[in-house]
Amino acid sequence: MTERGEPPVDVAGPGEVTPEPAAPPVAAVPAAPVVTPAPAPQAGAGVHEEPGATPDGPPDDGLTAPEQPSAGVAGEGPAHHVSTWNIANVLTIARLAIVPVFTVFLFVDGQVWRLAALGVFLLASLTDQLDGWLARKYALITDFGKIADPIADKALIGAALLSLSYLGEIPWWVTLVIIAREAGVTLLRFLVIRHGVIPASYGGKVKTVLQIVAIALYIVPGVPDLARWAAMGLALVVTVGTGADYVVRAVRLRQVARSARTG
Image (tube, rainbow, N blue to C red; front, top):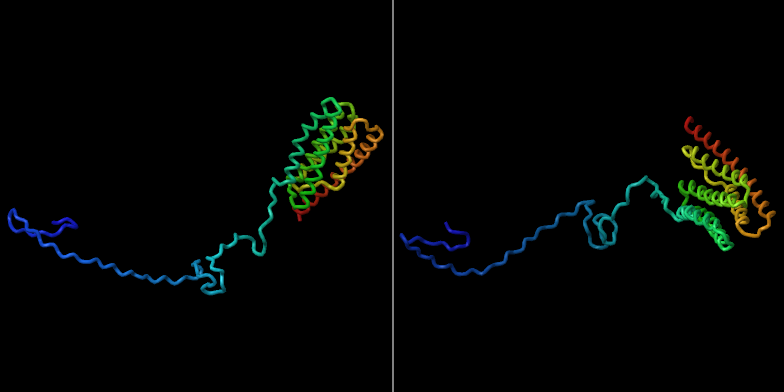
């Protein structure tokens, strides 16, 4: 048996091998190309067409089958999701972080440090107005912001009142009344949070501004006592009044939630 590619041989006799004359070379003829007809395009198969034509419809600018939008609720656009880490909430967290800096400046002796404490206090207070404005203007209101913003306010106001009372500049009873109101409202928010969130009211914002003004007057050296007491007295009245309003709103919220469950 011959190997593939070797010329065949004739056996002439014992011990003799006569080679067969080599065949004349044959010119290689290239094979004709085989044309396979393209299959007919199937409807919906996403076959690429020539620009400006589609199998059964108007021109599609030569694009392949367009990518379908993600599934959603029929007749509705995509839901708008507000991230918790938006600029308004970041400012709220920054206000919380700056409270220890303000407290340290307030306890250092010297008028320069007292003015530095005033600057930090006013800067932190400004972020309270700024984050609320940003949240309303750009629709960045979140449940986290509704809870964290009042807590940041209370932390700043509470640190200022406690520090000034410790330094003997604000009577302790004033500090205790304000802190008791703030702590009570915060606790009330958490007690009814399963029924809903109580956002800060307009009266609560006015209360915060009055407290900031009164505390700033106590931080600034040389302000007459009458001006300080007038500002703090007004802040106390609004503080107690808005606290009572929060209690009424919490009771109503609980009643509405119970009616919705039983209805």
